[in-house]
Length: 306
Image 1 (cartoon, helix red, strand yellow):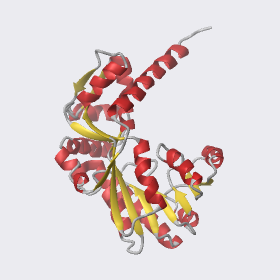
Image 2 (cartoon, helix red, strand yellow):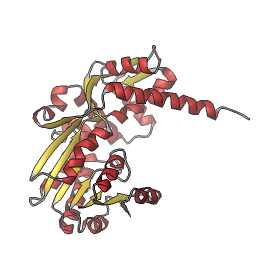
Image 3 (cartoon, helix red, strand yellow):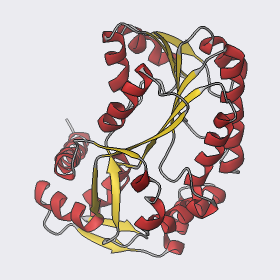
Image 4 (tube, one colour):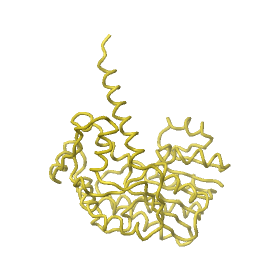
């Protein structure tokens, strides 16, 4: 098959592209970076340099393809997430229609079925709604839960203060997923898109921040690793200090509030087609402990003076 893929060589694509090529498929990978071209070609795929916002470019790349794999890469202006996602959905829909493609796999998100109470996750509903307007296209929506990799945002405070700060209580149980487990859900869908519109959830493991800290403290030999609960306002001020647009902050905080209730965020997941992967918390904390060691080694190397 001829397959076009957005997402360059990201965490999920870098796992799927080699397997698709190994299966004999003709794969075209869209990237916004010319520096990625040699790496893409080395895998045996064709590289096309452009952006997901360029309708004419996408139409050209999608033409004659049997399947298109869509995902959102990068961010917009950050002024209105819902409006930006709706606009991107319109671009995707027009490009797919103009190119005559009839099979699509879209990397969406848990919470895409929810209303404005889901904060930033609600934006994916606008994207899915635009794509569903194509009544003659088979579409498989892959909805992963929270990425394990998001937990690396705590790496600096873990290393420097032996602490994790969050406005979500440490006993809140959440679901996480590894890139490899997302790939294992998306890959067979790309090779055989089911008829109609289908939804597929990807999950690796379920645990609380307290569970994560307990296992990481042991794996990283950091017995004093601890949790510090902060207020929404403290979280907001920290993000403002990092120059995050206020509209993004408000949506992020609303998402955090939504995540505090498993009944809310995982309601549709519990009723739908869900694949539980193999990368568990114990596996991830080993990787995390190594990341802590790597950053410490890097710091020591940078302080060496000849």
